[in-house]
Image 1 (cartoon, rainbow, N blue to C red):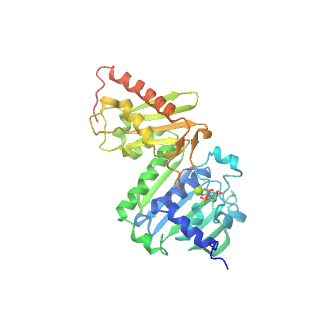
Image 2 (cartoon, rainbow, N blue to C red):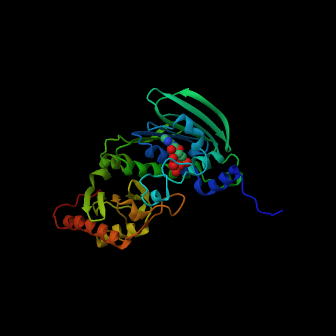
Image 3 (cartoon, rainbow, N blue to C red):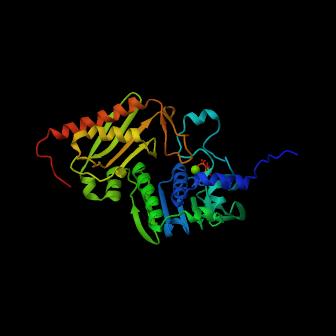
Length: 339
Ligand code: ADP
Ligand code: MG
């Protein structure tokens, strides 16, 4: 008898959950990204106790077919990839088919969904990776995902959770960034019944900047845009007078996805060069569009780090577009309204 076993699905999901579901904000991220991928125009996020006791994401997107609802919770089950060709031109935020089974492995999850205007839909309850209830229901078109008692069955992970305020901070930061990335979607975020963010979904990014950072900041922003054979850039950067003590207020969005990129942050900082005092950072929201073939998003399970195939060109392009805008600023006398 050999000694090597193939892990059963439940155990495999619990292990995968260790990577995909690091903390409550990872659950929020995965659920909200699914809502965006479903073409929703409104997404409401409700959390309690920093997301540790409850996370609910409600959307008005395409919903899940009743016959697919159980499959959606299986490992590597996705409607977003069909063949390996698709992997090199990913247009959706998700594609790994790992989020739902991973979340369901470490929490109590309820999914209520309907793909129909008629409201014919289904409700599925999962606990620690097993189905607890499945029934037909009437519900508005879209999906409501409720995640309770995260990590209730993985005490080691639960022990590592920080304060409610810290966990909420991560959630709020992520929703702010996604709202900045998708001004056409109306987002709300509430914590223990208090509304923390509300965006209108009008498509006006400056409105979202006002909702996230305040109207004062929104008034100090400069619109930037640029074209390149491979890239399209648009967004807002702050006038040099408006600075922050850290780089958290820089948001870079690539093909609708909020990403973290040291190199692109550097390009932004380089554009300001001596216009910023030392150790001060701008507020910036930049959306970069490119052919999906030019960016590899399959680097890390969280999909927040990406690889650009022509990174030096992209970096130079961004720096130039921003420099031009800021250069024009410097030469206009009298434009020093400080914030
Ligand atoms: P992925 O997003 O990588 O495909 P997930 O595990 O996050 O994997 O979701 C599995 C599938 O469930 C998705 O491909 C999608 O078809 C469906 N799904 C999940 N959430 C929603 C939602 N809010 N609205 C519509 N379909 C959804
Ligand atoms: Mg997903």
